[in-house]
Image 1 (cartoon, rainbow, N blue to C red):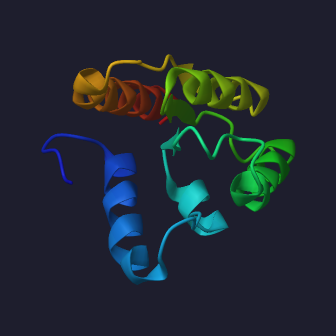
Image 2: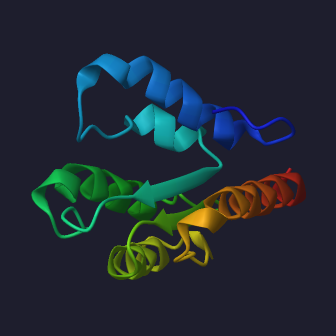
Length: 128
């Protein structure tokens, strides 16, 4: 979904969904997608928290990129049930991402997305 006026990180999300649509569930963005993005939004159902096997490879990739300094200046946010969002928020902080606090109310998801976009855009403008 494209929201007019949002930054490039939002286009990554739509591009990623479009490109991977036939791949089925449980896929992760490639390293190039992560490097291109201004914001990383980690979302999962209650069954697939950060300790699940489905997230292992992607979180290892993010850990490697963090150790190489390639996540510096990126915004991170978590979506999901309250417990999953809190777990992913911890991962976001461990990765050194600039955290946008999660929301627990699904009705506020659009507002949350706009907050993430605003923070990422402002940070990109400041860092030039």
